[in-house]
Length: 556
Image 1 (cartoon, rainbow, N blue to C red):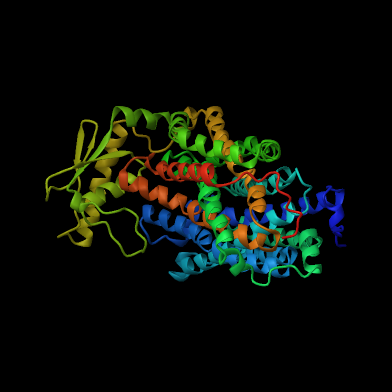
Image 2 (cartoon, one colour):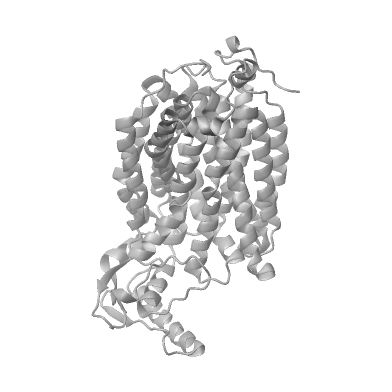
C-alpha cells in the first residue's frame, strides 16, 4: 500500500500520513548510515584482514584511507543522484541509493582477506567503498529535501532534525551490533571471522529499507512542479552554471558544511580513534563509552532543530563552530586525563624527544605498500608512533644518527643502510626492546588500565563533543533546503553537503593521524578541525543569510 501525497494546498499542515512518511524515510536513512559506518567501527580489525602485509602504522593509515575512499566519491554521487532526483523525483532515487549501499556492504562481508586473495582483496574492498560512497552521495540530499518539502512552514527545522539524527543513530546501531557480536563470540573468533556478521546483516536491513521506501509517495512539491511542467530540464547547469546559484553553493560549502563536517567527524569518529589508537583504551570499553555519549547527546539534534525554527539556523551553528574551535584542545586533554591518567603523568614527567638530522626525517604517511623506513630518524619516529608516545623534535647536526631521549634515558636509533635483512631484523628487535623497556620504566603504559579509567567523566566529555555535533548538524538540513529553489534543490544542496562531509570530514581521521605522526604531538591533529571550524564561522557570519522565514512552498 502506497502512502498518498495530498494536494499542495494541504501539505502545509503536518498530517499523520506525513509524519509516517518522515518516519519511514528517516528509518531507511538510519539503515543506510549503519551500512556506511560499520566499516569505521571495525577499522582496526579490517587493517589486519586486508592490509596485513603493511607495517602496523601504515596499515592503519591504509584502512583510514579506504574508509575515506567512500567519502571521496560522495560529491560525484551527489551530482549523479541529485540530478536524477530533480529530473525524475525523490522516491525513485531513494530506492536506487539504498540498493547500491546494501549491496556494497553485504559483499564486504563476503570478501576474502589479504591472506587468501593478496593485493586483490584491498583493491576490491576500496571499490566496494567507492560504490557505497556514490550511493550515500545521493541519499542525504534526497532525504533532507523530501522531509522539508512535507513539513509545514515554521517547523522545517524540527522535522528535518529527525533526518539529522539518522547518521548518529546509524553509528549507534553499528556500535551496538558490533559489541553484541563481539561479546557473544569472544575476541579471537570475532577477529578471525565474526567481524563479517555486521556486514552480512545488511541484507536484512536492505530488505526492510526497500519495503519502507516502496511505501513512500513522491514529494508533494515536486509532484506539483512536475504536473505544472516547471521542473528543471538541466539541473546541473542551472545549479552550478549560473553564478547566483553557484555562489550559494560555494558559501554553503565554506560557511556551513565544511565546518559541520569536521565537528561531526571530530566529535564522533576521531574521538573513537583517539580513545583506541592514542590512549589505548580497550576497544569494547571505548565503544561502550562512545555509545553512551551518543545516547546522551542525540536528543539535542531535535532540540536544536526545533530551536532553529524560533531563533534561526545561523546563530546555533555559529555557536557550535565557535565552541568546537575554542574547546577542542582542553576537551581532548581532559579525555586523556580521565581515560589514561598514567599516560598523562608520563607525558608530563618524562617527555620524549627525538634528536635527529632533519634531512633524515620524512613524512610518516605512506600511501603505498612499498615504502620502507630506513633512516635512523624514520625508524625512531615510526616506533614511537606505533606505541602512541608523544614526542618533541630536536634538530641534530647533519649526519648525526638519531636518538630517542626518554626522561633521563637515551636510546640510539638504528639505520638500515649497510645491513642485510637478517641483520636489520635483529638490530631492530633489540632497538624496539630497549625503547619499550625505557618507556615502561618511565611510566608510559602499554595500554590504559581499566581500573584507572574514569568512565563517568570520560562519557561526559564525549557527550559534550556530541552536543557540539548536534548544534552544527541539527539545523543544517533546513538551512540548506531553504537556500536553494525547488527546481534545483536536490542537486544544489547535495554537492556542497557532500564535498564538505565527504572531503573535509571524511578525510579527517587520516589527516589528523598523519599530522600526529609528523609532529609527534598527540593533540596536534586537532588543529585541522579547529581551523576549518573557524573558517566556517567567519564565512557564515559575514556572507550567509538567515533563512528560517523563507517560504519554500512557493514553486520556483
